[in-house]
Length: 137
Image 1 (spheres, rainbow, N blue to C red):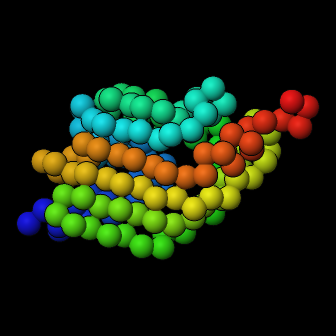
Image 2 (image 1 turned 90 degrees about the vertical axis):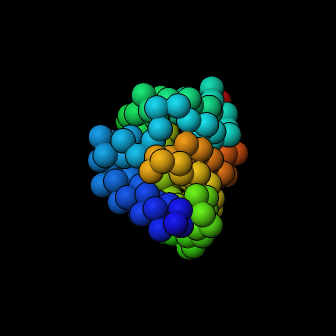
Image 3 (image 1 turned 45 degrees about the vertical axis):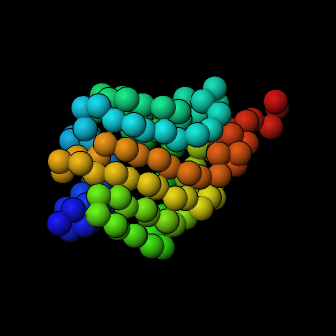
């Protein structure tokens, strides 16, 4: 039962993310959620823990203001009941330094009542941090 609902939420998540449709994307998240993207939050202010739909909205606004997608590829999507894992790779240009980051990624999503309640993104956070460091530092 949950598997098809979870798969649908994941497909919408990827669609709205690709289209940068902030309203539809943030509506997929619960008002109270467990969100974490580890990394250097002093360099990449959008990283870290988030707890609300409004935090998710601010995350994407900040991310999209500071980065430009170069490419992205989904390798696999695994769904088991209300849990999903998305794996792939991306390249993103950091607008502050014009450096491009290449990284593998793994996203873990948990869905309850047709909303995302848990979100984890693992990426090469070291590469992200380095890409935000100017050559003068």
